[in-house]
Length: 364
Ligand code: SAM
Ligand code: DTB
Ligand code: SF4
Picture (cartoon, rainbow, N blue to C red):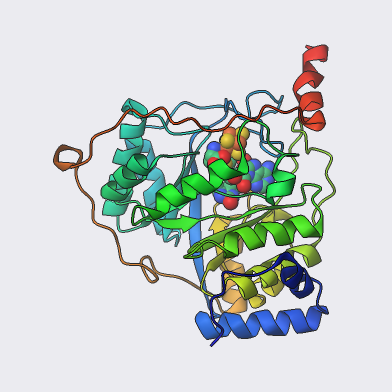
């Protein structure tokens, strides 16, 4: 059985990534079979509970307020709406609901209390609940855990070096600190990144070094292909080749053998054959449902037809980690601390982000 290593070097990871394809596939598939059932794929449904208007400048993101994209923004959803969507996701075979909010960080107050109620409601439906709400403190992570949160998603997105070319409103260290705060609760960690943002192969390897050196390694790692959205600084990026996606998935599987590797954004551009190669190379999770947060995703029926064709079965909830219990708000032992953490704001200029911000302003 391959051991879990936390001391991978960038050079070692690059050497794996660049192996002849057949050797890479064989090695990844072998490790995959040692640690997972190769015919089981975990299925998550994304739900954008608060869309658009985000103060951050992430160069890939259509929800950043400063770029001129065509998305429809929404205030925080009601708990009843979230419950209805979660029931639909459950009926269509999802084991997990992942709620995303276009926030820089979580602030204590009525909106966070509402999110905690959403977590309680979905956990009581016996589904795994994941949140991705931006940066959080230890106290906020513990309150989410107490409500019954199963996973917290917070992506490193790319290497520490390239991060500075993508985002200027926060720093890579802030991401690591939030992941550390999640680890201090008993919520599992979901952290991965995006390929196709103009990064070098060294950056893909650098991101995997950072993820693999977390101890414990994240329970799930989403690998996203950039969805190049008009109006964002990355609108004109070249689409990711399926071969790059397969190499990235296989390398992730080899350096993080126990992790669930999620084939995330970008599946609308991938053929069934391409996705099958990714599953063979160690991907064992997907986002299902015709929408990611704001962009399209394959139809659930098409995905279920693909599962049937490939003999894949959706994973049942709580197969990897036991269901957390839910504490009601009235019985909570944790009080909001109202902290105002000093998250970094480097504020350096990223040329393509500046251009995208100023572009349509001239036309308006
Ligand atoms: N605001 C929170 C944050 O940034 O952590 C949570 C939501 S944010 C949309 C979650 C993740 O979605 C990002 O970290 C990024 O990896 C991914 N993402 C956003 N836009 C994307 C795009 N256009 N293509 C691929 N992935 C994207
Ligand atoms: C992740 O790694 N990918 C998801 C989820 N975590 C939150 C988000 C993908 C977003 C793609 C662009 C959009 O739909 O807005
Ligand atoms: Fe905001 Fe998250 Fe989008 Fe960045 S990725 S702009 S933090 S919603």
